Image (cartoon, rainbow over all chains, first blue to last red; front, side):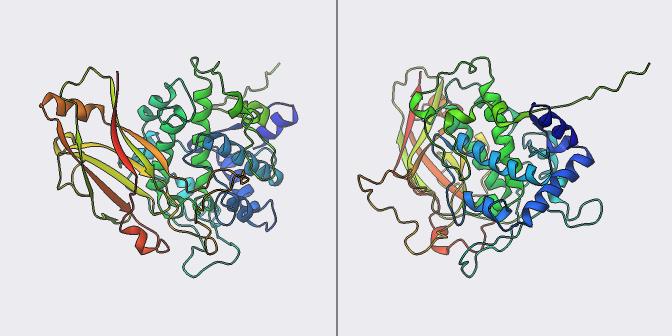
Length: 274
Length: 157
């Protein structure tokens, strides 16, 4: 993603884009970054990063008010490790409300066995290496998606119903909890390791699912009725506890400070002749 | 796409108020939902005691709503890892990952239909639907994938 690298070098933010709208070069760059992270065995490597969420560190936050801030910080850490490998690369979001998703299910970018040059697709599956594995535990990710017309796959109306909720936090009728249900449905719809909390983050699709989740959180934040939402100071000061970061909730609310934004389209101007 | 299985349903009864004031929303509220077991789709039917995983999710079949439990599918730590002992006063770590949670399921239209039909004694059938459970999920957790403390209905005026 050279354009993103240029943006970051110029002090701007990198753009996260829709997986369906990536150019072949952008998709290749994302796959290259994932592949390189998968080859590492240190704390910038795929198994370490996936293991923060699930086995063996078990630090993910679910069914609690701060699940969205926690996962924003977590994706930030993962994306920084990708950018260590391929400058400017960003996590693309998978819009599971799209007509394409409801017609065809998981995008070919994640479902194809090979890349255009015939190499194994690193977005299809990942090896799982954990300390002291027990017999029967998964050693690689797999998926068992339900039908694309399943009621489990959220619709745009579902997302819109959440965006209209004018408060965030712990009340189960707030945005955070209401939207959590749709997030859960996608995990269950994909099945396989994605459907199990301790193993879900090993699936390469996890990151794009949660990028969509984070994008909806961002869209909720910029709704005119929510832009001045008064966060409880106690919630703002809560430490998120994502290893390798020192973020509190307050630190992650402005995504431009985290170096990224969400774009639905980009048209680059051509150089004017004459 | 994989086969689905349906563990035993849960049947409960709810009494709707005889003189219900106008409301704009009605939620079924599950308190104390556990999520140590398999991930599961949970379908809810009103006055359809024989509903199961094959019952159409239509209003005429009594379908009221659904939700999923994105769950842990077993314990993948050392012995005792998933135990939740009483917390010491000095244990200031975050909440246990398996702390039960609550879930609101909006069932407004289904409740309106019941009230319109003059029905106040409602049977609630909770149908767990397991989709393609991985082989490492312990079998004893599959028999009862939906466990909660309390079910109620809440009206919003």
